[in-house]
Structures are given as C-alpha cells and as structure tokens.
Length: 159
Image (cartoon, rainbow, N blue to C red; front, side, top):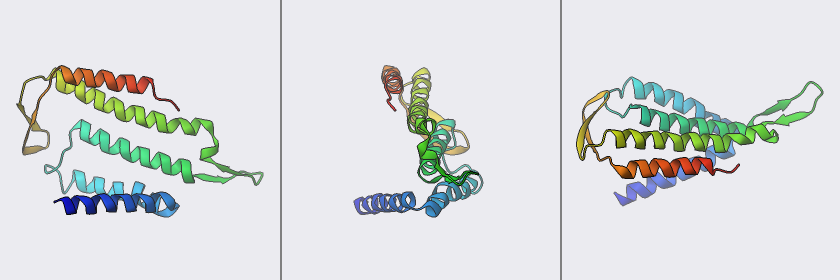
C-alpha cells in the first residue's frame, strides 16, 4: 500500500511539473481531461462516486484554479499596434490566486457549518446518488471553530 501511495504521489508530482511547463500539455491536462473525466463522473460512474455539493465544488474550484494559473502563465497575444501582451502583466489578473484560495477555503467553511448544524454523533448519512454508500459524520463545536478559523484565513489572505 505504501508503495502504491508513493508511486501515485510521484506520478502526480511529475505530471504537474510536465503540465505546468508546457502550454499545450497544460491545456490538455487542465481543460480537456477534466471535461472527459466529468462526463465519466456523471454518466458511467454515476451512483459509484461522491457527487454531493461539497465534492463537486472542491473538484471544480481546483480545476478552475489550475486553469486560472495556466492562463496567467501562458495567455497572451499581439495587439493591433504589434506589441505583445501577457495576462500576467495585468495586476487585476494577479488577484486570481488569492480569490480562488478564498473560494476554496469558503467551501470548507460552509461544509463545516453544514456538518455542525446536522450534529448527531455518528449519524449515518446516505450519500446522494450513491444509495449503497453510507458514511459517518461526527459534527460538533469543532466544526464551527474550524469554520471560524477558515473565515479568519480568508480575511488575512494577502495578494
């Protein structure tokens, strides 16, 4: 099991390095693959994977982050006067990293509040779309504390 974990970790690291260094491979990995995998996720794997709001939001905010970083790094063109422009040269584009981070943290905060509000120790919760999957949630005051910490993180993000 440790060997598989190490191999998966190494492959993710290597594929990340490959995809972030190449404009074409980045587009394939961050746009084309997610589209194909999304079609599989919601068709072939329907009922066999997590498709509640939290898991979907986390996956697609991470994909949006990857696409945004790819665009900041590679997106550019030529103006009518012949000068070149790049997205990374615009200060407003550099607001994207802290904004996508804040959105990602906010998703976790909302999930913590949701779990805290449905507080029942070891309540069995049926996952939407996966009728055979049952998992246990244990909510309590720690969820609200974690959500508060996340909100403080959002407030203190610097660009």
